Length: 437
Length: 60
Image (cartoon, rainbow over all chains, first blue to last red; front, side, top):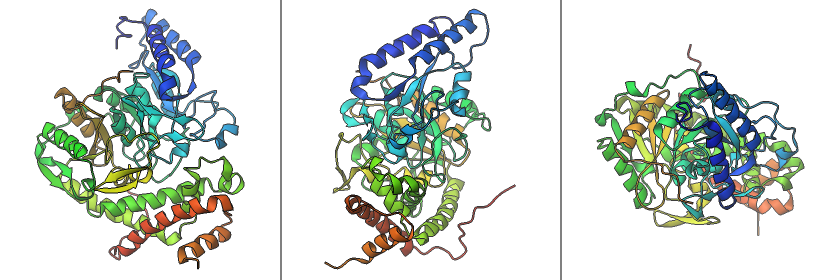
């Protein structure tokens, strides 16, 4: 907005962001590829359009960056892997990037992730670990860890990620920024490297609900996302209980309660057998991912990240019966959830069972029991993406490490989730300040 | 020690599906398989109504 009003030039904005990245990304490791030359050229073009009196677009001069599974013209799309690095560079940007750049954004580069998006930690054997800007001894979450951390660090105003089992919602929560996983199929996945076709979603990160909504409107055509037209009825907002509370750290339940109070909600709701939804998503993800990578698992297994390889091999070898049962269960669970949405418009749940674990931490406490970190961070996100529901992760304001809450709505109702995020932001319940580095 | 049913399945499936697992990768892959098998068992123990279909519906 400041660029469009000529308060500052796009060139000045991009140089300030480049300087911040150069000063601090050595400690955080968000970027795997820097496209500063391109960013400077795009900023100059924005400034030229403004000087000529032309409309430079709603994102004029806004610095963006993308998870490195998006095609970026001139870069090899690595998807966090060593294996894809042998491939030719992309000849064109992914359509999602093109939409933002056409709206005036400038692309600063590509961002770190778990290998092939199969993880919740962004501890990558090939590209190193991404660190949490709010505490560099801790993980950023994953698999879009670089995307969440870059926004939290003030390296970019908007970034793009992907979410299969929680890979936008989880790192957004752990890094204290807003993240949107839209309805399954809402944003075109063309030009991005897949993980699990059944559950893959694209979506943005931002430091305000307004920026998140603006990015979402630009990323697709089917939903005008008229936030101002949405009515939030407190009686139709509920906190999810049962599975979505079991094992959660007290501070995460406090965060959910704060969001519920902010929306004046007191109801509770249950998604039946949500733990089985998580189990089904777990099995289907491993299966589809294993099938996708089967040939490379056969001929060059040594080139996979050691954290990824065993799960892909195991996934590919699962009995067909398990996958068939998971698919049938999905149909049942989707119908049960539809019935819950007859009574409620918004459902609330923690984005993670706990705040950000330490880098390299192997186990965490879940309901008094020590469990492995990697498979358990997504306990509360997996049942939701399993049936493609839209979710806005909101960062709850307060001292201590960031805590994210999922604002879940029925399919196609992203606008309501964005409206709730905006209302919570206005009330001071949620906020995404730039981390002090 | 005798091989478990899960181990026997794992090795047979790897052979049948032409995905040989190198000896140095087998222990971790088998461990991951056992985690998946436990999740799959939970699904198998849940009785769904007979008419629930996996097939997608195409709504015009």
